[in-house]
Length: 279
Image: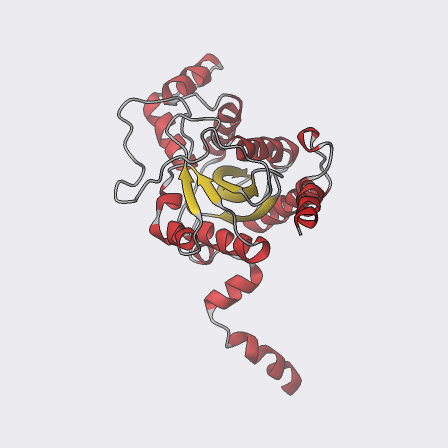
């Protein structure tokens, strides 16, 4: 019994923050109480996510008409509420679009006419909605633009900035740093907690212009592959199941899934090979 106490007590002395870091768990998820969603609404949200994946330029009006054409009884107000909840936004240009968080700084888009020809030149990041059997979550991932390698990712119950910052710290610790980091203008990415990590290391911050659906095209392709090849095939019962399933897919995507654009190499082998050549 004494031996057991001697083993357990040092773990108890670890701060909650340190325990989360060791387990790669987002701290906000420890305090999150899920909001109840009935099965019908969850099914509707999943279907809306599928429609958005096929037609990312659909706004709430087109989404509503598509659902009505399929026999759904739904109004635009409900569609708008669910799209906000899911973090879905049309890629089509909109007049007089306000910033998601007006108090946050927005940085210029730096990739226009830029030739991206090496790894760690540009990293990109985005957030997507992940449906589950009894709820939903949000997934953030960081990829190397040139190799398509997924460098880090985090799953969260909330859209707080903290899980994005955690993934960013992991990517920087494992892979060094890029010259440019590209995101959309979402409040998580314009938050000073996120941008300061980049700026303090001399990394240039680039942000997509509104309605520029091709700016983060490689992250969008990752979401499409992930959802059709993993997420939609599995009704995750919990965050733990979702995290395990997504982790399994990310390993497959990096290490086993060849890409035609990479000469049928995998993102990991392509990335590592270019690093060796540059060394």
